[in-house]
Image 1 (cartoon, one colour):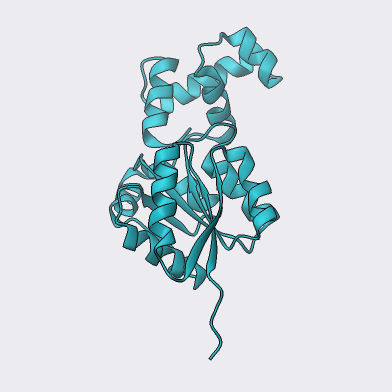
Image 2 (tube, helix red, strand yellow):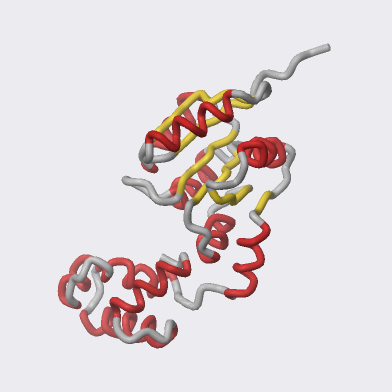
Length: 206
């Protein structure tokens, strides 16, 4: 009887204590092994290539690149790698964006270790695994009302830059920037651009 080699895992998490705890817990599973750990999103693709990983477990909020952007990079460059997104923030918009980025599973970090290990096995079998509470919340929330461009301008405005600075950074006219921001504010029923950024972030749309 042929024994299958352990599933090769990559962990991407910027908090060392959380990352090491996850590695220790997953290391107790007899059919999987953590072969790479990174603390930055922009290190995910290179590590996945270097270590021939089967499954990448990605946090969302990381320096360098978000886990959602890293998931999209893996989808485009290494489509055979399955992606499990782990997050502290159970935001419905994150779930939609993770699925659009090619993730096979979306779980909150406080899920039991056994549930995480089971999710790894399920995604390798071609299944999709989504936290039920988040799935229900995403359905109730509805789709992101912001266009890609509106979200881009709102994200750029989060640092407090004025319209002239935003226009230069985004290669747009000041009038176009003003229009995008105004539309985003209206769609989100926000009081101003700062309130729009807050709302969009809470929903997971930025």
